[in-house]
Length: 290
Length: 244
Ligand SMILES: Nc1ncnc2c1ncn2[C@@H]1O[C@H](COP(=O)(O)OP(=O)(O)OP(=O)(O)O)[C@@H](O)[C@H]1O
Ligand SMILES: [Mg+2]
Image (tube, rainbow over all chains, first blue to last red; front, side, top):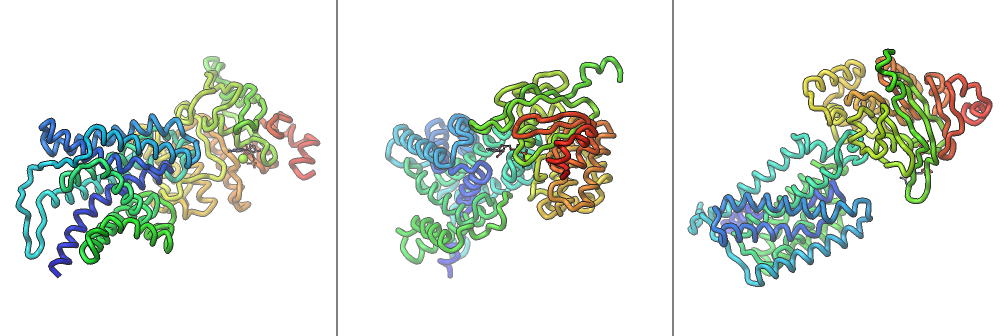
């Protein structure tokens, strides 16, 4: 029982950041119909940004987190403007190939810049964990969960309560008609890609210090993001949120009760099962965003 | 009309407009004019290029050749956003309400470029007065409205930008006869209140009856133009479009 509780706590902590990854990817796919293979690299970018800012430049850890998020958004906006905008109207396969190219380039740049050795980030949180009964969790991990929940809530607010969010939803539902209302579709696409990328970078910035930053960390993150989005239904933010927690839960159980080696295989298992039995995702009603 | 407005008597002019999808020209060099305060009809068979013409006027489809003038200004290269801010609203074919947004949100989208919050709220109330059925359904998502209600919403949404020129693409499409009649009555009211209208219609008889001037489009070219009455009495129009 105690062990199961521990798994539940771990699920919450991991699930929050997984949800961020999933929301970011599903927003981009839902609104732009772009399969974003650079998503994992933005996650890695977030982790390395925190490492570079706090460990190399001596910036305050919390400031480094904020800057990693903003940097991720800027990088996402750049990718959208430089790579995707010129290809507007190209078919989805062409766009996918370009994004795969960008993914490979970004990963190799990380390798070149940081080398193959994993980097650790020291945080201002105490080393001794918080122990409640049989459950023990580090302060850093609690902080990670809180920050993830804050960002999830902020994204919901943005999409459902702001003018930009309304324009994003309109673009998702009918881009031509949104343009007739005066929405600048290019700007919405750039904003969407920036927000989605910022969420991935934030996830990396939060989990980087928990684990380590290493050049291929983005691959697993990308895979997991895809699993979450497929699980939650393409374009569904709520689905991605729940999907993030489900993936974390399944991983915890897989690692805890089967073998720790199977943790990262769980994403694949989920993708296969969902595609076999419920290809629209667990939570897909009609296509919608929000 | 005062002399100061002389330059504005012609609100919209198309000169030799050519529109292509890839290599295929859907509109092959048409010229037409819409004067301030008029209701102008654009009629023609399926695939004649009516929707394409409206799309290029509203900036959705940049023309391949030719010129679009609005209030004397060359706006040929304008984006949809530019055209809307100049005062051209487009109620597209098939209504195209945002299905997962509420009635209110759809109307707010119509006022997307406006910054005058209080006037927007007043305009929305005016739309609700004009369309009481929408008022009852403010918070309902538009996808669940009936076809007639969606058409009212599409019209209300187009009015929310306070347009000078309103483009209607087949406003009667797929509606029950009594709703069609109501829709045409509303369009006439909008014209009476001072908004200029360019309307595409399959229902040639109704369109010619209510318009000031009409153009007949056949395979991307203008075949005829004249007052509604002139076209109604034209033998070709009678046999081909009015069923003899
Ligand atoms: N997106 C598109 N891509 C390629 N061809 C198109 C596209 N839209 C329209 N066309 C073609 O352009 C021509 C004119 O189409 P358009 O929609 O303007 O006709 P229309 O007069 O509005 O017809 P309808 O009365 O059926 O609405 C048609 O031959 C049509 O097949
Ligand atoms: Mg048409």
